[in-house]
Amino acid sequence: MSDSKTYAVNIPMYPLQIIISFDTDFELFRERVLRQLKNLEPEELDDFEEFFQDMKDKGKTKRTTTGDVISVFGGGNHGLIAHEVFHAATLYMDSLGGKLVHGSEESYAYLIQYLTDAVYDIIKK
Image (cartoon, rainbow, N blue to C red; front, side, top):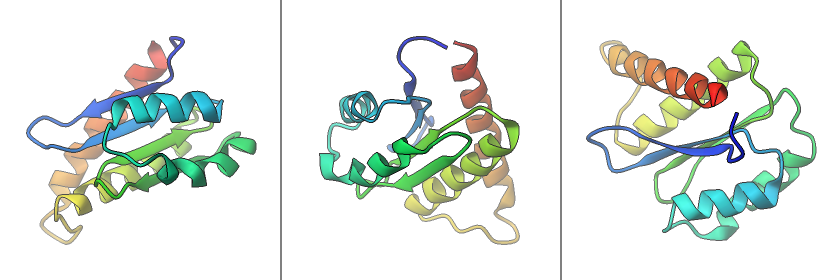
């Protein structure tokens, strides 16, 4: 994985971003996220600080007030990735007005596939 471990995943046709991070240092994470999400208030990242103190094999995903989604991974095991990608997809779709109901699952499945591919591409860097 490259030196920078925080990446913006842009979904074609939609104005919001999903931030994927494998950073292990809160201050570096904060700096990189704020560089990507220019309209984000820095205080919105405060609840990640405690997470960074004990993040091994854990994940945290949240939607910001701007509607963007941030996912932090404390490891790269498949179950953790699946878990956090699901959270990221549902929060992102909710930001766009989508609801997970019978008949909408295919759009969620495509987004989960897209995000999973993005996460593994990041891991390979």
